[in-house]
Every structure is written in C-alpha cells, then in structure tokens.
Amino acid sequence: MTGEEAAMRRNVCRNRLTAAALGILVLVLTACAGPREKAPAFGLGSGTYKVGKPYQVAGIWYYPAEDYAYDETGIASWYGPGFHQDRTANGEIFDQNQMSAAHKTLPMPSLVRVTNLDNGRSIVVRINDRGPFVNGRIIDMSWRCAQLLGFDRVGTAKVRVQILAGESRAIAAAARANTQTAYGGGGAAPTAMVAASAGPMAVETLPPPQGGAPVSGTTVGGRFLPAPEVAQRPVSGSRQIYVQAGAFTQYNNASRLRDRVATIAPTTISQTRVGQTRFFRVRLGPIESVAKADGILSQVIGTGTTTARLVVD
Image (cartoon, rainbow, N blue to C red; front, side):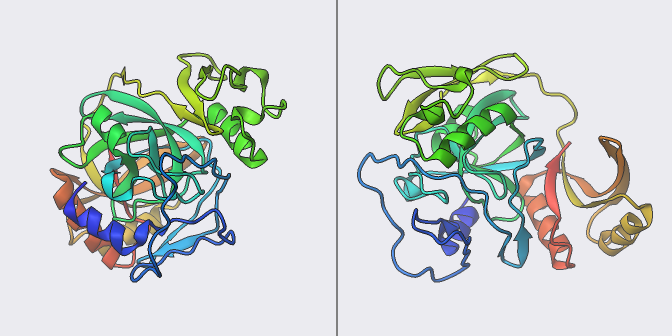
C-alpha cells in the first residue's frame, strides 16, 4: 500500500458503516466524526447483506449493483494493520489475515477470483467492504491476500477480478437471512451449499454450478471464509496499462471524447463487443507504469470525464 493510498484512505475514514447504519451509504472525504468503531478482540461479526445506494466520493459517483457477470481488469492495492479489527461496510470485522477485500460496487458479501496478471497467481476472496477510493484502483485487498498474490511489498498489482456468481448468490442468501450457520441452516440455500455441521470451524467446499474446481474454506461466526489457496493460472496478452476514458455505442460520442483528451496522452478508439452490443472504447496509452497511469487518469478526470478508469489489456 503506497503512502498516497494510505493517506487517502484515512481522509475518507474508509467510509465504513456500523451495523446500526440507516441503510444510506454516507461517504465523507475529511474530518470523520469521532473515532472509528473497534470490534471486540477476535470478533468476526456476522455482517449483513448490502448493496447500497449510489454514492459520491471526490466528485465521482459510484453505483453499487448485483452484477453477477462482473469481470474487469485494473490495479489492485492492499490494506492491513491500520484497519485490523475495524468494522467493514456491511458490519463484518476486518481481519488483515483473512481472505477479504473491498470493492466500490459489488454486493457485500460476494466471492471473487483475483488473478495477478504479472505472475499468474490466483485466489478467491470475500468482498465485505467498500473502497478503494484512490483513483485508478479496482480492488483493495487484505494484507494476507496481497502476500499470497505477491504484491505486498510493491503495494499494487495488475489484476483481473471475476465474480463467482453461484457462490456469491449462496452467501448472499445466508447474509440476508442473518443466520448463525453458513448458507441458511434451515434449507434457505441449495443442499450443496449448506455448511458441514461439525463445529464452528467446519471445512467445506462450494462446488461451482457449472463444474470446475470447488472453492474451499471455513465457516466462522456465520461467515464463509475462503481458504488461503493459491492457484496458478495462465495469463496472456501484453498486460499493458491504459486509461479507459469511456466506452460508447455511438462512434461520434467516442470521437468527441477522444478529441477532448488527446492532448493528455496518445489516444485511440478501439472496438469491442459485449454480448450483441458493439462498443467504441476511448483509451489513452499504453502506459509504462502505475505511477504515470495515475497521473494521466487524474488529468482525464480533471476534464470532467469522471467515469475514466485504469484497465490492463
């Protein structure tokens, strides 16, 4: 975690909610009122299911949603000792040694697979917090996650983040039911998703709906915690960093944006398809370093293009 990211995180006070929050995500950039809530020692907190309303940080709007098709690339960061045992945005307790992470828009809780695009290391983590609110970061991971992915010392990594749809729906159902055992106990979830009943630390697996490798983990305090298992995955492509200023279904809209930001860095329009829809992407780059990409992204956002983000392709 870089010094800039740590400072920004403290300025926004992680924008976390207590379990008694009124359901409105209030995000404050400076001077958070009072000390942040600390949990009892070793407490985990069962947490609640939360998506949340649209919210704004530093002039940028974020739109939380149940997006079970989420699959994006970008830059990951990590957080640890300064936030250990604090409340997360859905009322759970952050543990820097567990497999958890913060995301700006995905449901809490949900499970995602994060792959380091530089070394192919891949892990499954539980999303239970909001952030990171430094421009250009796609996910903020616990110290343990960063260690397993191999970027705890450098602070950032190029990653791909993919939601595990079936598993995420299962743990969401359990959180909605506010149960004391994983996956609803009384049959609220499919039988294959119900936790083993051999005590509070029962080891279990979640078989993916479409087959493939299961997700291993433990059930602690009503929460499914993914196991600290690293898979090695093939990575392809040049893995270069770009600022994606926008994506449009109409070429003229993309052309106008390109003209507005082209003086900042080399800018191109490329085509891609999502399902049956064609998009024209406006991208600046490729950019040789995260630090330089951060600077270019800030300039693009300064033009009023607040949806701009970093991507790796």
